[in-house]
Length: 293
Image 1 (tube, rainbow, N blue to C red):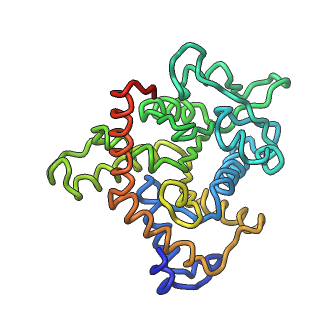
Image 2 (tube, rainbow, N blue to C red):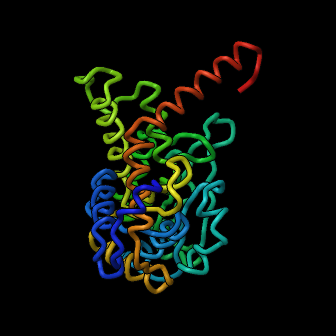
Image 3 (cartoon, rainbow, N blue to C red):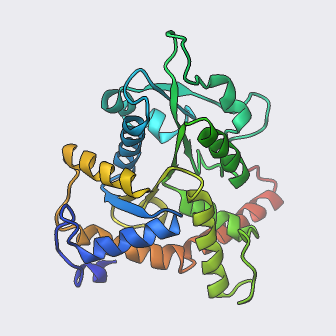
């Protein structure tokens, strides 16, 4: 990563002029199953941009409107209440059903809290569902995402995935044997096969949602930065709002170059996958000695 800073480009991202940043945005959009993406300084900015754009692009744009999210999620609990101040949205907390034994949300958890567009003036209509993967260390199953996003799309509700740790979720699932529909032509442990499974996992999750954020720090180890992916109109609007919030950046190659190395080496280079294998081995050793996980 340090070496990448010595040869990166230093052109203006506000003008779409930096080739290192443009290349990273194109790569991440494709990996996440979308057509466009934009670099942002943090996951919080990415989440808040997504909420603002989705809510303002809705056919019935403007308050009153509400979002649904897990009370443990970053957008609900760790972003200084900005969903209210920046988007005028009423956040509604939805928890996994008591006694379900689940650490993640399902459609059955969400439905009782949804307020569809109606003539009831007492409610703030649900315009956005925000999910997070992982959520407090728990992986949100792909099928649960598919069920929630499919229902939301059929009812005109936008969906956003805070995938700050989506890298970790996909790497952990692949380490457990999940193939995401990819065969083992290169051998189960071959680098080509591993990369194909990791790519398929990112795309399988990302394509289900109207927008996705991923973080380059945290598990990938880049200095800072996140990516927000979605449709062309969505990202164009997000870049405009990003600029109005002071988030337009100039020499972004200094962020994009180490982020690209993190994706290439930490994620696709199997460093993250190996860390999950080591963690699983340590967990087994701990349990064999009477420890509780």
